[in-house]
Amino acid sequence: MTVLFLTSMIPIPVLVSPGSIPIILINMFRKIFLVTCFICLGAAPALAKSYFNFSSGKMYKSLLKAPYAEDSEERKSEIKAIIKLQSKTNPDTLRESLARLPITPESFCNPSETGLTRPHYPKLYRLLDRSEETAQVLKTEIKNFWNVRRPYHVNEKIDLLSVVYDDQSYPSGNATRAYVLAHVLKLVFPEKEKEFYGKAMMISSLRVASGEHFQSDIDASHDLSLIIFGALLQNSEFRDDLKAAQKEISVKK
Image 1 (cartoon, rainbow, N blue to C red):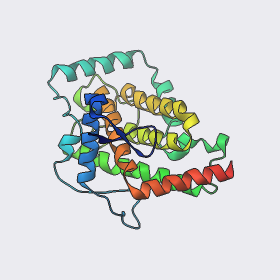
Image 2 (image 1 turned 90 degrees about the vertical axis):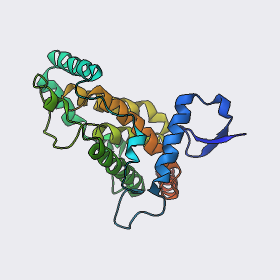
Image 3 (image 1 turned 135 degrees about the horizontal axis):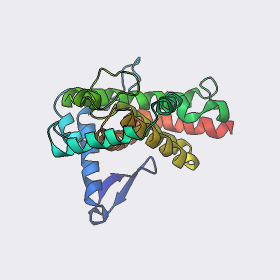
Image 4 (image 1 turned 45 degrees about the vertical axis):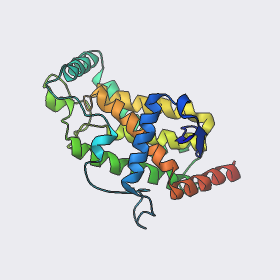
């Protein structure tokens, strides 16, 4: 007996033996399957960038583990970690780092050095824009469902070292979008995989140091990005856009 499992390295399903799949991967595949069950897999509306039409409802509770309660020992430990981290952080340096790392397709493609500009590579940016918007829509729904306050709202000893965000903390939208962009870009530029993930990790760590997020927000964002990526690989429009972007890159190299 075999089961269908999506690897993170190639954009096609692979058949493997159930006994060889670690339980954590089985759980991840179950969540990817759950997403596709609650998503309309038909074409997104013509003017929408997201690859999916997300249904509303409490399915979001099943995608990620519940966030820590504010009075839990885990949350108290996270608060102490942020306070300690900020005591060793130069606020001006951190703000400069945040400014240099916006979460956009351009910041990952670095067009000033690579020449990967929107006018010259429209199919690549279509793929990245729609992937990022897909992550944006789903993370917003999950944030609204869990309604977790941000660290600087929970404890007055935590400073906000970036712009003020009015939305919820769990999971991190910036980290989710950054990891989704990294997942997608490695399919187009596999030789730059480490660079993409390094940038996503840096973006994520800065969100904790700035007081915007708890570490558990970041961990959940990484998990969510993998679930989104797995669902994208099963979407025909995404696969078509991916092939078009890959062809565009190969022709212009």
